[in-house]
Image (cartoon, rainbow, N blue to C red; front, side, top):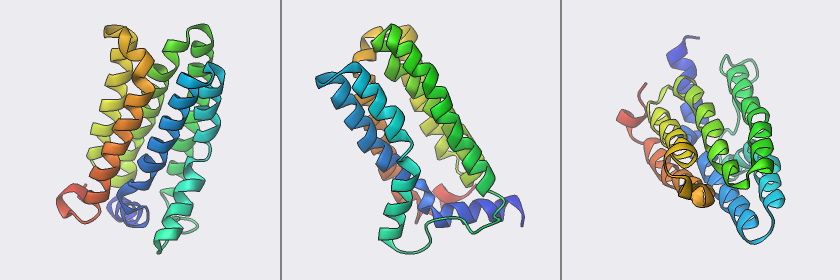
Length: 182
């Protein structure tokens, strides 16, 4: 199997990946709500531990929608997808440590970590739109850390909004041969 066929499989089975950002939008909104109106530690724990549920919830959503919900055993992209997924919780350990020192830094750091993880999706799905998603998340996180620190307090909410926006973009990309083309 060549790379373009593997990418086409990933796009088809995961429906251009729209459900991951949908689950992420809900998670980021929940973590932001707990962080804002509950406790800082609770908000960080919500994003950290909830993040571990993104793939299983994504799989459940795909099963509900019908059709395949996972790559077949032995698919060449399965290992890359798994390796990419493990970068987020490891990176979030750093965001939690930073947030423990200065809570306003937690979500901006998390945006950068999660955004960097989406860079792999450019090759995994063969879709340049993932470069845009990664870039928006990374730039938002960097802006809140280095340029406009006032964004730090709302950056979790902004992250949820970005994920929701890209849910729509990716949902529409399923049926758009131009968007789905590598």
